[in-house]
Length: 115
Image 1 (cartoon, rainbow, N blue to C red):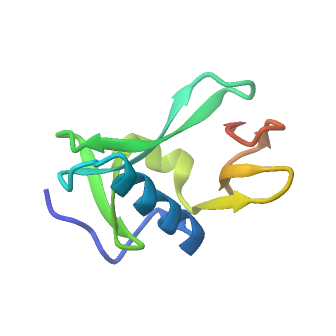
Image 2: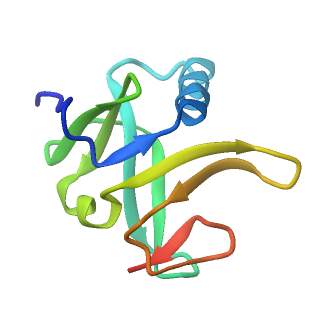
C-alpha cells in the first residue's frame, strides 16, 4: 500500500514527533512498524484513542506525518479528521494530548471522547 503524503487526517506537533521517534528508538521498534492512530469503544466518554506502534494491516490507510509512517483504519477517519496530537511535559501533566474537533465531549483526562 502506498503512502499518502498530501492529505493527512491528523497533525502531530513537533514535540509529539520527537517523543514518538524517541520511543521508537528506545524500544527498538522495527522500521516495518508504523504509528497506529485510531479509536475504540470504551473510556469514560464513549470512545478512547489508540496510539501505538503496530504492523500495517490490509485495511489500513497509510500517511506520512512529521516523518513518521501513520497507520489508520479508514473507518476511524470520521472520528479523527483534523485531530492534533501533542506531547505535554509540564509540572501537572506529562504525556500525549489529543485535540479533536469532532469530539462533542471529552473526559477530564483527555483520553476519551464522545461524538
